[in-house]
Image 1 (cartoon, helix red, strand yellow):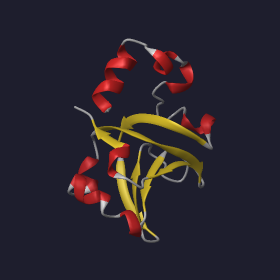
Image 2 (cartoon, one colour; image 1 turned 180 degrees about the vertical axis):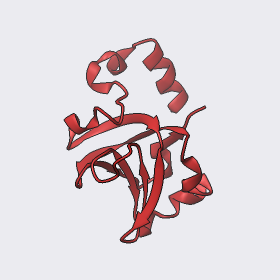
Image 3 (cartoon, one colour; image 1 turned 45 degrees about the horizontal axis):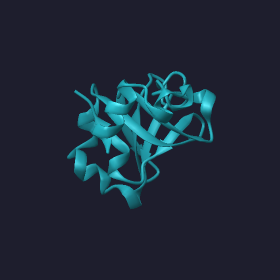
Image 4 (cartoon, helix red, strand yellow; image 1 turned 90 degrees about the horizontal axis):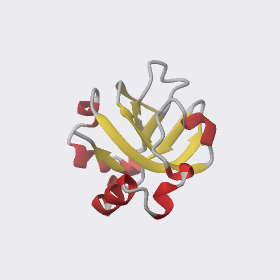
Length: 117
């Protein structure tokens, strides 16, 4: 499906031509809280706390865009081998953007993410 989406997005076909379906950056995702978004950026750091693993896309993990995996979804990390190894890599993620001190997507399925070249 990702290959079909990529082709349709490049050709600006159907819903992929609509601005609402554009790929967002970690810097502009705060404007679209409580909506499903596709966000692409470079993971700058990782951390853990409160039973969660975090991937941070900004220098201030308390205010910048973050991905979170809780204990029940930690299995997602097996797909990545070591999520901390994603630091410095560009990834694209799909999910519902919520506000938890900063914009965040909670990962619930490995197919929400693409590791980009």
